[in-house]
Image (cartoon, rainbow, N blue to C red):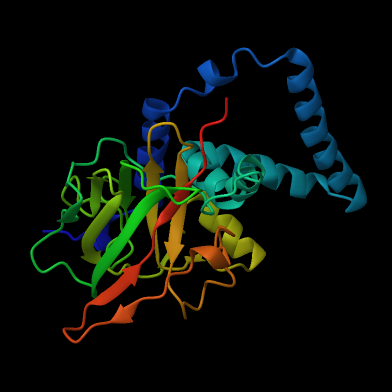
Length: 285
C-alpha cells in the first residue's frame, strides 16, 4: 500500500485546494457590489506595476513567453490557491487586521477544511494509532481584549510529522489532525496533539518551477493552524510557530510573526506543553 509521501503530488494537492476553494468560498458574491471605480483603480494599479517592471528591467519576448507559459501551467496544475496564499496572502492579512488590538493573526493558507469533528473543550485531535511526532499538550483560553472570558470555538488543523495534510494527500484518514474545540463560559480549552514538522510546499508543479528558477527554497517552518470564533467578536485566523525552527526567519510564505512563536516546555514524560490563549476584538458595528 502506497504511503502519502510516495504518492502525493503538487497537481493532486493543487486540484484539491482549487476544488476546496470553489466549494467553500463565494468570491463573486462577496465582491458583486464592488463599485466599478474600485475595480478600475485596483486593476490599473496592478497592471501598471507589471508594465513598470517590464520597462525598468527590459523584459524580452523570450522572458515574456516563459511567464505566459508558466501562468498557464499554474492554472493547469490547480496551483493558484497555493501561489496566492504563499506569496500574496500575508500582505492582505496585514492590511485586513492592522487595526486589531487583540491577538495577532496570520494567513489561512490553502489547506483549511470547514466542518472538522467536534471534540469538546478538553480532547485530542483525531489521529492514527502511533501517530509520529512529539506529543503536544496545549492549554489556553479565549477572552475578549478586556480580559473577559468568552465561550467560543478553536478550529485546529496541522500537517503530520511528514508534512502532509489530510484531504490533500492520499493515504490519510479524512479528518486526521483536524478538529473543532468548543469552550464553556470560562473560554478554557485543553488540546492534545503532536508537534508538527517543517515541510516544503509542493515543488513538482508550477510553483516549484518558479522556486527552482529563482534559486529560492520551498520550506515552511513547523506550525499549527487555528481559526478562533466567539459571538460578538471578530474571527481570528492564525498560525502558531515553534522556537528554534531554521525557517522562522525565511518562511517561504512570509507568515511568521514574533507574537505567534510558542514557548513549549518539555514535561517529565517527554510531552511538550504550551500555554497560549487568544484575545478577540469586538465585532465592528
